[in-house]
Amino acid sequence: MGEFSGGGETGEGARHPEASSRSAIDAFIVMDVMRDANLREAQGLSVVHMEVGQPATPAPAAAQRAAIEALSRGAQLGYTEALGLPSLRARIARHYQEQYGIAVDPARVVVTTGSSAGFVLAFLAAFERGGRVALPVPGYPCYRHIATALGCEPVSIITGPQTRWMPTADMVATLARQGRIDGLLLASPANPTGTMLLPEPLAEIAGVCRRHGLWFISDEIYHGLTYDRPAQTALAFSEDAIVINSFSKYFSMTGWRVGWMIVPERLVRPLERLQQNLYISAPAISQVAALAAMEARDELERNREVYAANRAILLAGLAEAGLTELAPADGAFYLYARSDHLGADSLALSRRLLDEAGVAVTPGADFDAERGASYLRFSYAGSTEAMREATARLVTWAHGARS
Image (cartoon, rainbow, N blue to C red; front, side):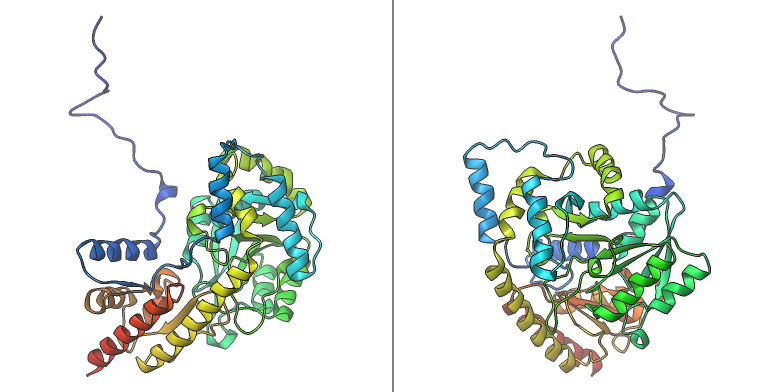
């Protein structure tokens, strides 16, 4: 009997399968910037990280203790129910009563592997192949990349200073009347701008979606991280809204990969089937930690105060560096600044800032293919010491670049 060679055809005439066309999505540029910044650090060079929206604060102490205790007592940390731990789903539902005064049935809560899995599940549950999803631009690039990979069509809503960097109800209604969209995904506060919709325009957009039979997906991942007034949930204006949130930002648990959705009752079973097949369940240890994190409000509010201080430092520093044209920074931990007076190509400009100033920032091209070359996004999620160092470097570099 011949020995198994472990190969098929070789040499001339061999055919090799190629990557699918659906995988041909654009890169998430900020991750490329982070990779290059890490490489620079590995070479012994100093970098201040302002590229990734990742809190420098650790997971809440209570979350860490809960995870350690679960491991030390040998708890069974296998698969949970597909929709998540019942105790965590109930606690998330209670969060909406406490924070927004809205009653949510725990049965409508779906625990996900971060908000990223929530977007995948939402698109699959809400849209057929070829479904058209309206996305504000500039916006989080992974929305359109995920939609494209799943066979949906992103439809851009161009925003800017004239609309306070947010879509209006009229914009959404126009697309709906033209039959160009099947739904809308909106983040408030938004990435990259940090801009937030006030309750009235949010209610108007929810009303347009309801009247035109559009799915309304509300990304509320930056709720809790606001500085002048609290954010309002879309659930206040629409029982049909699909709300996506995560423990990554306010709760400082990016690497734990746990988030949640609040969905209409008719989507619960479809989402449960999708979750069963695609993810089985969110990580059990992360769900245990997340449940404890929800009781760490005092610690989390202290973290928010750090971001508020960082925001003030960066606002002053960018102004001194000549970066004065900013989107309204209502929430999240980003400043989106016009930068074309320092360089017409934000990708090349971010490369120069990394190489010449040791400051890693994200080019606006990641968020807006047409106008993003004129903008940079600065994250102030790091430590206050890092923000002071970053602004000092930016000011020194900008003065040199202009001289």
